Length: 430
Image (cartoon, rainbow, N blue to C red):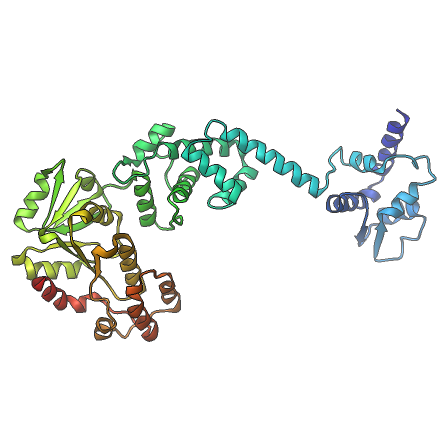
């Protein structure tokens, strides 16, 4: 009991003088770093009160120097021989800061224990589900959304709990099949009763996207088109109206029956603009002669269609970057065609689009006029900057390496409009 009284009196003594404040703060910081009372505290530009307090405590001249260095052991020796000589100075230092004294090592251990307990409680009941396995795996591997989740854990655990539970439930609800999809707003409403809860500009939407990318073992996309494709692969269709593609001379079927709307355009040989909404209604798409020709550029598509209309070839236009609608269309016809001819611009972006499609449709997709001689025959005088050229490092298709090397050599793009006549002749001959 007397020991406690002396500790309290010692604390009171040091707190009674503002001159000890910076010294004790420095000793606390050293304790956090070392895990014990030790080290040296340096007080720069000491105040008159600090000079007076430390001169009295340490029994040395602290008035003349520009800074004062105080070893922890000097403080312990200073109180030795006083009535406080038997107090536990750890308790004094702790009491000086109202009980808040812990080393960084112990603080980290406590933090990790508390974090593990938090996530273990959150995962309870979800252990053998897709969503539960996702969260458990990334917590162990520190991959995917781990950094985002830990940042949010440190900021607002209560909100994170709700968002993770909704995300896990959402992932568990998804089919992860392109043949069994649900509209985004309906999906969100079912899980959270809010059709916009998983919107991509919301934190929960970002978590859902990260989880889907992990389960599908693909990098999390950074653009809207990539996000739409990833969600489609997970079983969600979003933006059904403005996501569209153009086609001509293709037939669509529902449960084996010809789609009357599509058939009208097919009969007339007219191009048809189809959205994800239209595509969701059909299960099979077929092309004439089991061959389809795809153009990146709408002008080229229109000219080829005009010049070959009497042959009625099946054509598709992707409008530059391949939208999800174009992929869905191709996914629904790929099993019913022998060859898919794809053409596009011969620049880094165009080459990567061709590469993406080649990786997706393998041997059925023919890279159409992607030879170095094609490139050299229409090469422009524009210059491609180094940032764009660097994109070619991501190429995966061996067939595209020769033309990629030609682009790297000349640093000039080539545009497919100048190959239009060759396309027309190929379509007529094929």
